[in-house]
Length: 132
Image 1: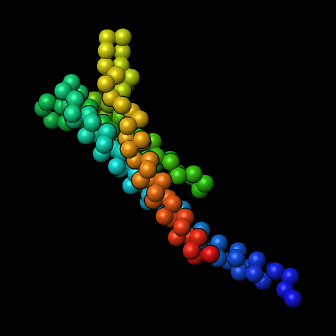
Image 2: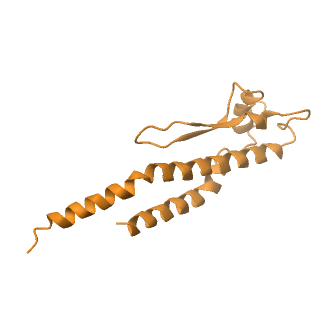
Image 3: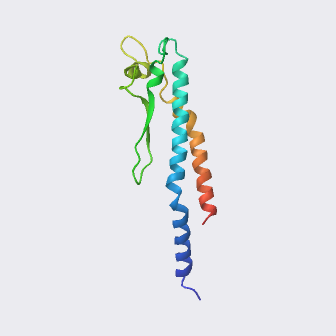
């Protein structure tokens, strides 16, 4: 009769093998999602007759994303970079002023990308579950 320790050790070893590459796989999914959201934000801005650059890059070239990862958290911060040309127009484009603006939908890219991100993470989880 087994006390279950051998099975528990084997399960723990399986979990360790699966989790070794999990962070990098999730980071790759989040990176791809951030790129897709950035592309959508730029495309939306280019549809605007008021915010797209007429002669060279305009406000749309200020859309960037930054990586804010730690050992426990994978995070991207996405949006207009005020230090880039046209970046200060982000507040007007997305939130408006007393004189108007606010024509951009800041939630649209995440709402569009969320189902793809969730699906990609679910596939990873299913893959990892199959390795246990």
